[in-house]
Amino acid sequence: MMIRKMKMSKAFFLILISGFLLSMKISSTTLNDITSNSKKLKTISLSFLPLFKNENLDFKDKIYENENSQKFSIETLKVYISKIKFLNKNNEVFVETNSFHLLDIDKTESMLIKIQIPATLQYDEIQFGIGVDSVSNVGPMIGDLDPTKGMYWTWKAGYINFKLEGYRDGIKSRNQEFQFHLGGYMPGENCFQETHFALSQKNKTSIKIGIDIFDFMHQIDLNKQNHIMSPGEEAVSLSNQLLKSFKLIKE
Image (cartoon, rainbow, N blue to C red; front, side, top):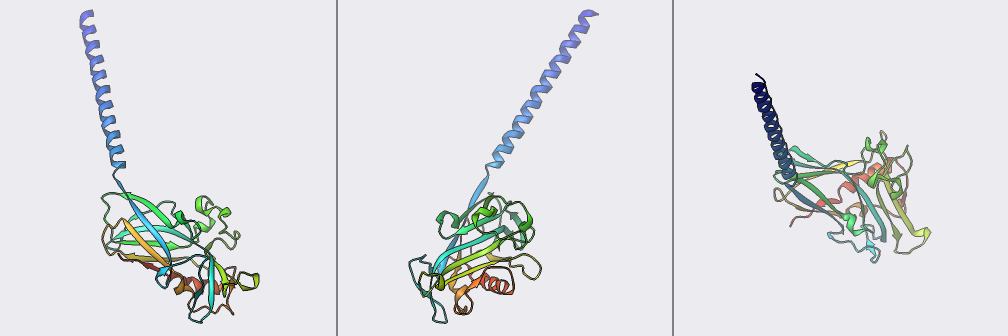
């Protein structure tokens, strides 16, 4: 009787060991599958190119002219790009998390955004916001939303979506400077914009977007309108004009 019990105990022990080893194998396989799947990503390069009349913007070293025959130079160009999404047949298939990127013409590396998406993802359109939406204006101030980046007014006014500064006639003096700081998120003052582009090639991994400052500046009379430093109707109107500056560069 004792021998029989010992045999049963040994058999039960072997079953437990076998079950444990099998579970370890399953867990290991599952972990390997997860690790393998996590590596099946591809990188999308989203480049933003500052332009003037479809030509590369010569930052600080060139005098430009608008349709009012007014000359000016550009010293500062910053803009928030946010809420980047990819669509396929008008349906969202990928949304970037924590999607806030501050483009700064003075920092070349900031003009390139790299996004990792599933390698098998199918998409034919890209969508993104210009500025910071109203919800995010009262959210965590981290990353590119850090107020030390110089793109935040106050809790009431919120973020500056777009900042363009320079000098009229190319003369660097306080009397000749212009400053367009466009932002605001309260009702009637919301300057956040969204735009989208159908891709010339489906599943394209290198996407170039031009920001043509001529399209923004061409109708502005710098003698009458040269300082916008707070939310309001002027900021909203110019934000609508800014939207026209963004264009897909087809290759």
